[in-house]
Every structure is written in structure tokens, then in C-alpha cells.
Amino acid sequence: MRERVEQILAEIRPNLQMDGGDVELVDITPDGVVKVKLTGACGGCPMSMLTLKMAIEKRLKDALPEVKAVEQVF
Image (cartoon, rainbow, N blue to C red; front, side):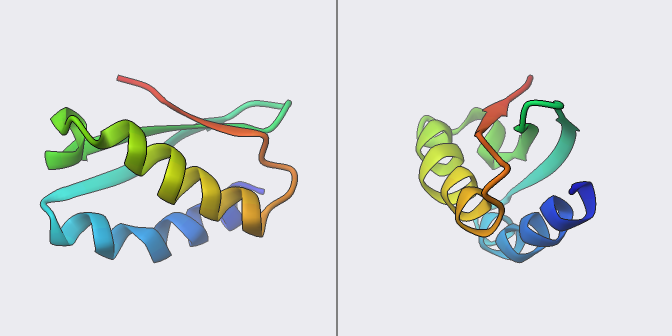
């Protein structure tokens, strides 16, 4: 599952990088929670939670039904 999550993050990454940000995979829990770290401009952006839930989490859940949630770690 980790490889599939990394593939999807690689598809999302160029959009984040256009705005000076990035995302890195930190962990995937056994119960399907993907933990990511938003870096660069995304790390301190007031819209980061929207990006996390509406872009990253939605895309991962659509592609991988075993993903239950995406959480940001700092």
C-alpha cells in the first residue's frame, strides 16, 4: 500500500510545488490512516487543512478504499 500511496502523492506533488509547497509521506497506520507532512509554503499556509482534506485525502480515498483518513503531522 505504501508504494501506491507514494504514486498518488507523486501525482499531486507538482500542483503543490507550483505554489512553493510539497508533501511527504510519514507513515501509514495499520487501520488505514495516512500521515503526511506538508512542507514549504504548504506547511504554514492557512489553507493547508483544505488542501489536506479536499485534495490529498479525497484523491487517496478515491484511489485506495483502504485509506480511511489523512492526517497532517508537524
